Amino acid sequence: MHFRYPLQKLVDLKSNEKIQAEWGLSEAIGLLHSERNELAALEAHKDEVQHQLGNASANRTTASQLMLLQDYVEYQNKEISRKMKAVVTAERLVEQRQQELSEKMKEEKVWEKAKEKAYAQFISMMQKKEQAELDEIALTRRVQTV
Image (cartoon, rainbow, N blue to C red; front, side, top):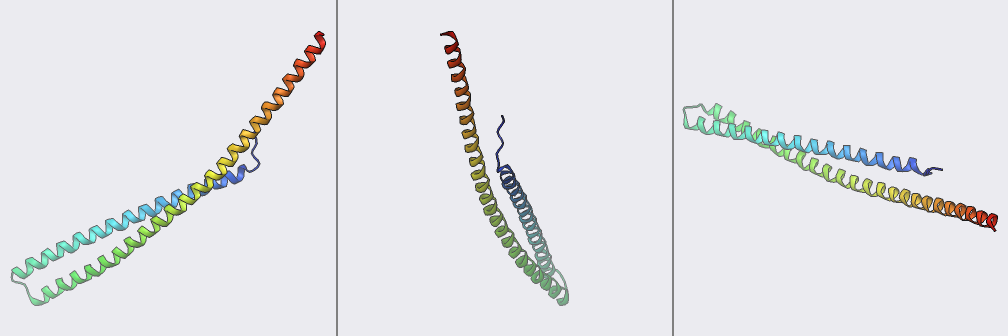
């Protein structure tokens, strides 16, 4: 006789939920890295434009070109601000997914412990049955030898 846990499908479901939560966390971390990389690229580009603006003001440049560069720097500042908000949102998503994963791991552990307890009870019951059979065989032999 082998062990068959009646709630195995529930244990499998909890395991699958944990795996899905891991995927969700991985996806959120990937999004966060992407947002941070884009923010870094925007900041680097803004620095480059500011450097161009500094060079333009030192050299002979028209006022309209200076205003255009200054407007572009302001646009870059707005984009950086928008991207910073996106990074904060992505960080919150990562935290949320970490919490979800933690909950799913706890749920899976609870059901795995229940399964282990049921298995231990099954083993104990099988050992008792086996011992009872051995005792019966020994008693039968003793009766036959007497």
